[in-house]
Image 1 (cartoon, rainbow, N blue to C red):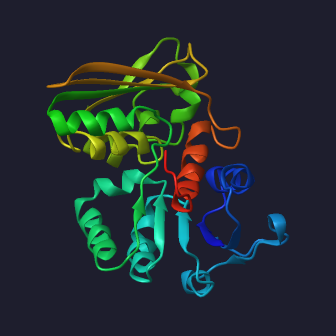
Image 2 (image 1 turned 60 degrees about the vertical axis):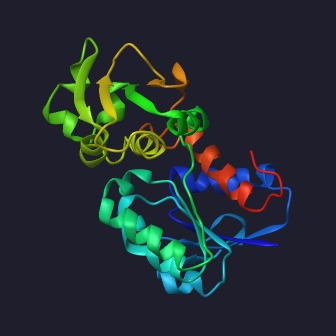
Length: 263
């Protein structure tokens, strides 16, 4: 039986819990969820904890982080040091090179693995393969409705509520994007890690009042050829800043952890 723990019970966490029965063919048990405060009557009588040590004491085989960059920084190394594998949904946290190396070191010194889901984008397997052949350029463009950028630094740049046409709210490196827009650019970090890195990956972020979906586009050029991937993903019904596909990608990581055949 696979024992699963979660950190956070927001949009991604709730969807993961709801989707696990569909994704896992093996027997499993959700042994607990780490939350800021205890939640009464949690779904399926799952226990909630407010201290990471309480969750670790349940001896999960894998913990799924669904709580943001700070959770990765605060708990990541401790989880790995306890020989517990970790799914990181807040991949933007790894734009911090020091944290990245700490997590890598903690994983190397234990038998625990770090799983990075593709999240809201597809084609990561092709990007990783193209990297082995040699990459020349990787550009990522993300378009989201103005409401998805509320609560970010974009509010100081444009009138998001009154926007009449598409506006570029950021153009620069993946590292800068992941730092300035941490809640919106986990895909940026995923693409950077799979490809040319945070400094060489080009990023453009756009607020577009003409769209309802989150539109992700990757353009890749390298020695093996070039390709473009465009994905129009529906926003999560729980949180418009999150793509609906993200939680399913995270759940698939958990399924792969317990599967003998991995896709």
